[in-house]
Length: 270
Ligand SMILES: Nc1nc2c(ncn2[C@@H]2O[C@H](COP(=O)(O)OP(=O)(O)OP(=O)(O)O)[C@@H](O)[C@H]2O)c(=O)[nH]1
Ligand SMILES: [Mg+2]
Image 1 (tube, rainbow, N blue to C red):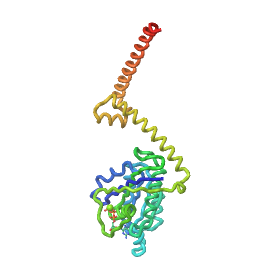
Image 2 (image 1 turned 45 degrees about the vertical axis):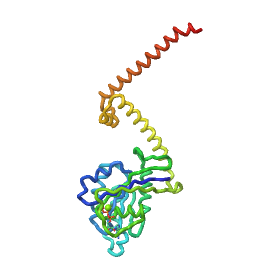
Image 3 (image 1 turned 135 degrees about the vertical axis):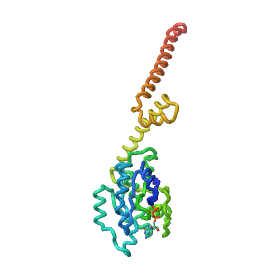
Image 4 (image 1 turned 90 degrees about the horizontal axis):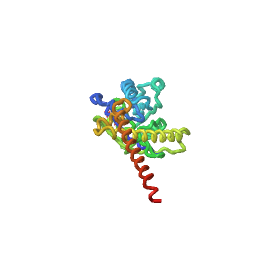
């Protein structure tokens, strides 16, 4: 099973806060990252958590404690049972400890994000490429300098740098994850089957709405409004129905005319 991850790496500096929340839209799964050696980065997880729930609903979130390599020398600054409490209380999917420096659990983190995105597929438009290939937007969020970019870079091109280069706004990288079919939970294939059926239904619905909008409106703004919520625009729906009636009436007239011709001219041929 091939999963193409589009990896959104949000700059954690406060000055980017004002547009950060927009990035949560359309996300299939989130890795919420904190630095195991800085307690405040763990405390701030709640802020991101609330934002994600508000913007993206109940999407899967994995808590990530990064820089595990430093814990030996600096010591544990956040007790494990407190972390686990947070995971349980907030219904998070999993907790993974990582090190971008020593490449600990980096692949595991992104493979888990790919898997939970697949198991929770809605699907959003564009996520299903075919029954063996999916495409998900996955996001790493968390405070500045917790190692979001380092984890993504390690995963994508196996690079790591000790120099801190803050992310300005947003970085985007893409990488495929291959999940072995025999390792997938049994219910996966049923979930995929249902998602594909749902997608087909939705595409049919969208095509119908596009047809409606083409009939009733020329300007793109109105078209968008109708596609978003056609039933909330009764005036336009009425216009559409009127036009459709006219069309059906014309077709009926043509058929009647053709029948009359047939009745009159057929005897003269025989
Ligand atoms: N020891 C250690 N250092 C790390 C690890 N991951 C990242 N770092 C260092 O932490 C610093 C910050 O890493 P970044 O990946 O830039 O952090 P970020 O979360 O992307 O920061 P912003 O872009 O500002 O949000 C860098 O100096 C990295 O080298 C790790 O696993 N272990
Ligand atoms: Mg960064």
